[in-house]
Image 1 (cartoon, rainbow, N blue to C red):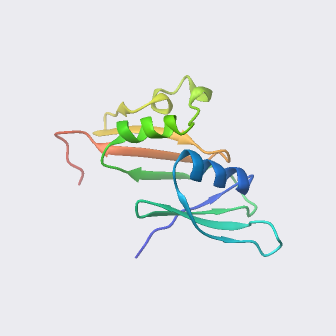
Image 2: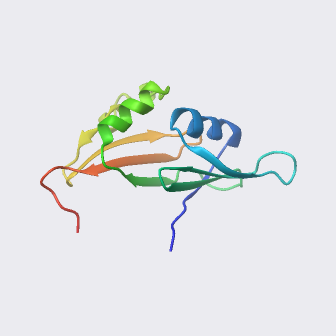
Length: 127
């Protein structure tokens, strides 16, 4: 079984640009039945996400467990990640040790979806 989250996008072209240029995903496929991209698959390091311009509510959350959050955060900032819009949220500003044993940072894409990147803190185990 493979879990592939599908994120709704207000502007799928803007979302594709964000995920490919800033986060380093590659485009796996696009579907454009009316001449405009309506659905796309992107992938990075064995992770796959689908983007869709279908109607509906906004605000999906995807958790991505990684080996090293600090290095990944620095990579995203170097690629152009703008984290200035959520000054009140430390976890949006950079990796933060959480009380539940994870070191995490959160980023929001142009359509209001939140990606939560985290790794297990040294000395902790996840059941």
